[in-house]
Image (cartoon, rainbow, N blue to C red; front, side, top):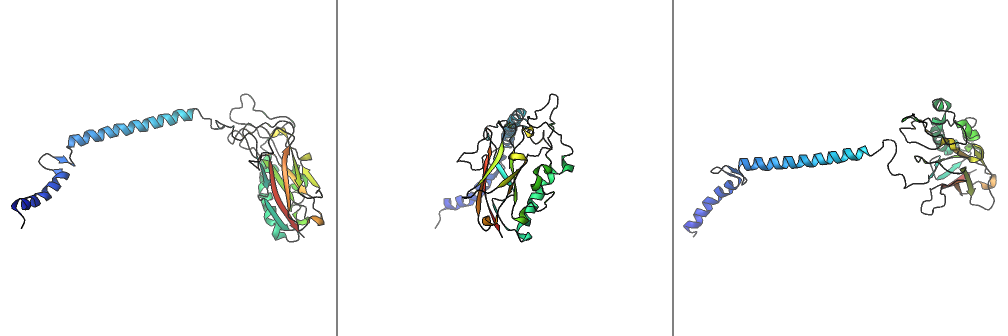
Length: 279
């Protein structure tokens, strides 16, 4: 049988448990009085407001050191990579079937819309052979030099809307990635080679596949709102003996101080793609 003391303890236990939450005799809630709760809540309110203020002040000071147009650090990518259009590193099509090459033609046509005369009217005719530098007092706005798609000649899609794909002599477009402030030295141009015994004849547009200096430097998206990258078109003059073979084509930027032989980055100043024309 339980003793009288055990029965008394069991009767008091519910009251003790309730008192730990709220004690009506002392007015304590969870072991603290109202004034104690008010003081501790005031402390945390002031503490977290101080932390929020310090964070806001730090962010404000940091933003004052940044430029909306130019990144603060630009030393990680000293040379641009090469990009290709149509946007594929594996081009394969049947020259006798328009449906097989229509995706490449549409990709090229869509990409060249920015280079139409109607889009280039707002840009400026610049002086070839010289960098286009920001003028004094020009502020945030920088003039963009015109690049008309007609400069791409037979690869412009104007005289030949199929870009040579229907005749098995396709065009590809090459451009350098944008790097703010880049001023390539020398006279950069594109040179492509096909990895096979017998060389394949190619035509470059504009003349000699050159990137004119007047399109450099690039001043950023805000300052150069209408800027378009200069392009080089390569027309691959395949013959019948080249059909039904997968050929690897490597294109590089030569004639300048831009890097094109870094084994750690195969797209730095160069690009390799595969192309196969089925007869």
